[in-house]
Length: 571
View 1 (cartoon, rainbow, N blue to C red):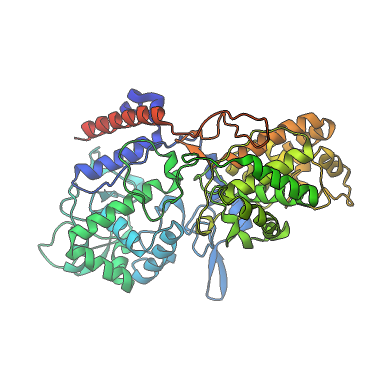
View 2: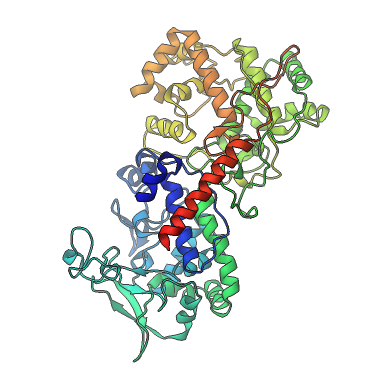
């Protein structure tokens, strides 16, 4: 708190927490390969509600396994095993997996190893990442459970003392090494140098201690020993780390950085001058608008010719650009049309995209791409949608180019449309929230045409929706459309139905947001802010390719000062 108070709004709690962890590791001699600053604090915890565990999750996607011929559904708020993607595999409060043993198999190693691989795999960790980050993390610190839970004080201490050795948290009571403030590979050496027997902690939790007399005061969790004795590949890696501290140091540095940074999005969002080399899991796309832009005027002319020749391309191009862009989610800054990954699986095979025939729209754009090879597919897709929207609505919107193309669709794995709720209304609201759209913006984008017979964008969509016009060619493009007639969304529909100008203004705002939401300049700024690239003869450009040098450097110096302060206090 004193550090946060000193730096105020210049330092987010998110960055401070990660900096504190990094500094603690470094103070013990451990490896930290770099720091990506720029985390943004949430106002409250409501963004975590869709993650569960909750009553909604258990009704929509009940988790459990079959045991003794019966399906066991875990109670809300407790360990939920058997959950399938995209749900998490364990309860957050248990820190990834149940430390006493997974699936209720307390003290058993193989089930825990299976659970560890499942949980960390869903986080994007391979076996080497997993073993190094667990074992490296357990080079430091201890578990806290020095008394029974009902004997702990209200502020979480045991035996009337308030030192770290008497803290109560998990109910497990052990330290992994005899030097819990020093970076070593002793965790892995201890794993194989002793025989282990299970005991119960003062709080009654299952844990392990070395057998024999005159053994060190150390312990292991069931999930620790699962790395050495519950899985052959984990055991191989654990022995490698026991034998070679240098390899552990290298691997843990990378795994820790991944654990701390995976939700930060592309490098263009990072602040600070202590970034490591680009990691294997990070986006390889260059920052947007950092290279010379093509001439978009002849490209748009070719797009307009395609629309004039075949008016069904209005819906084809608009729905393609929207489908490409709406994968963006503000929760971890993934998705969006930069990269044009809609050309590849898995996006090209998603049922929502097959329904509006995005592959057919891409085929229609291919001759234009061949005629204008200097424009990226990503820019071409968005410009085609932009042209179709302006053509069919009379709107005049700014266009911002500078997107680049990815060479595969791998970065879209896990971004498919999700179910968040048991009701269409709940799903729609959560989708808007995760995309960063206001309710008005989200409702406006429902009018994006997908039917080839729809060549005009207007508030007629909402008139037909309110009237329940089953013969309307404007309806039926998107799932959960009827949810727009419920709750807080219906007044927005009614307003749009009564006032076309209100609808078009909201649509232009929403369209500009969704097609540029993934073009970052730092953690909070957008590279397209104030930018208008000419797409028609006579237009003049505003804005310039974003470099952000002054802002980034001034923020970098601030981050450096914060690091120094955290380090000084830690020492």
